[in-house]
Amino acid sequence: MHILHVSERVFPIGGCERMLSDTCRMLCDAGHTVSVLVADDTPAGTFALPLERLPRSRGPRVALRVKPLLDAILQRLRPDVIHVHNAQDFLSPVLVHHLHKTAPTLRYVHDARLFCPRVPSKRLARSSELCPHAMGLHCLLHCFPIDSGGGYKRPAKELALLYGDLAVTRRLPAVGVGSRYMRDQLLVNGFQAARIHLLSGFTDKGAGHASDGRAAPHVLAVGRFDGVKGLEELPGVFAKLTTPDWRATIVGDGPGLEETRLKAANLGLSERIHFAGALQSAELDALYASTAVVAMASCVPEAFGLVGIEAMSFGKPVVAFDIGGVSEWLNDGENGYLVRPGDHVALACRIDQLLGDPVERDRLGGRGRKQVDARFRPERHLQRLLEVYSGMTSLYSSSVSVGA
Image (tube, rainbow, N blue to C red; front, side, top):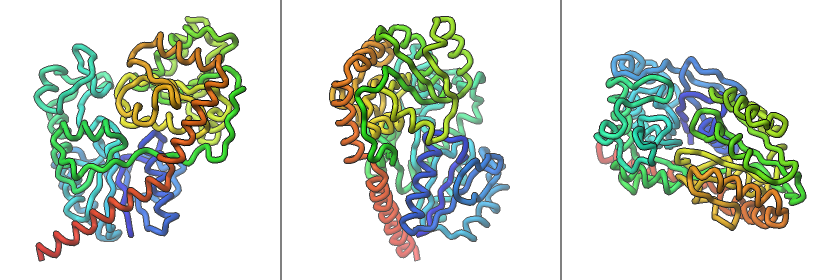
C-alpha cells in the first residue's frame, strides 16, 4: 500500500510531528510505501524520508493556482490512501476536498484548532471557562472579536476558511482522534460517529527500563512555553513544595520561556529549576529515566497528552490536571494523580506527596508502565491504523464501481 501523509511541517518536533515521523517509520518497516507532502517553506530537520513540497494555499484563489501542482504530485505518486495531519495553515479547504476526491482520505485531528478558532483553545474569552459549544454562532457570542493568541484578531476571511475546513472535514470518509474527549468534540460539531476512529497516541520509549523508586526528589515537566501547556505557572507551583532538596527540570522552548525564567528568579528558584530548552530524544529519555515525578499543568483540554504515557513507559508517576483526554490514560491513585484543573495548590501537594514516598512512586509507576505496554505501544496503533486504511479503500473501491 502507498500512503501519502500530508502535514504543514515535519520540523520543529511537536506532538503532531512526532506521531507523523513514528507512523511513517512503522509503515515503512511493515513493507508499505510512504510519501510525505509539506509546505514548501518549512525545514526538513532530521526527517528520515524525502519530502514532496507544495506552496501554501489558504484562500480559494491561491488554491486554484496551486491545484495543478498538487495534481502533478498525485498523478506521479498515485497513493492508495491519503493521511492528512495538521494542515490548517497549509492547505485550503478546497484542496482538502480535492484530496478526498482523488483517493480515500483520513484526517487525524491532533488538537482543537479544527473546531475552535481561539488560542488557548476551548476557553471562552470572557469567562475563561471551558467552552461546551460547537464552532459557529457561539464563537461570536462568547469570544468575538476572536483572538488568534498571536496578538492579533482573526479577520472575517480567515474565520470563513476555518469554518470551511471544518465543513470539508465532516465529509471525509474517516477522521482519527487520540481520545474519547476529542471524539465527543467532533460529535458536538456535527460529525457522524461511524466516521470517527479512536487512534490513541503511542510510544516506544522506556521498553525494558527498570524504575528506581530511590531516585532523587526531582520533578520533570515537558512542553512548550506558549500559554497552553501551563509551563509558565510551574515556578509558582514548585515554590509551594516542601520536600527538602527538591529540584526540577522544565524541557521546551517558546515565546514564554524567558518570562518564566525571570519568574523563577524572582521567586528565588534559579538554583532549583533548570530550564533545559528543546532536547533531542535521547537527552529527554535520560531525564525521564532519572526523575521521580512528571508534572503536567496544561490549562486547556489535552487532545491526548503524549508526555504522560512517555513518562509512564519509564515507570514514572504523573501528576496532572483532570482536563481533556488526560483521564483516559491517567487513573487517579492507580498510576498517578489527577487534580482539579487550575488548582496549583493541589498540584504541588500531590507532587510533594510523591517526592517524599518512594514506595508509592514505585507502585504507581509500575502500574503505569503495565498500562502503556497493554494499550499504548506502536504495534497496537499500527494495527488499528491499517484496519482504518483497509476499510476506507474498500468503501472507495465500492463507490467507484457503483459510479462506473
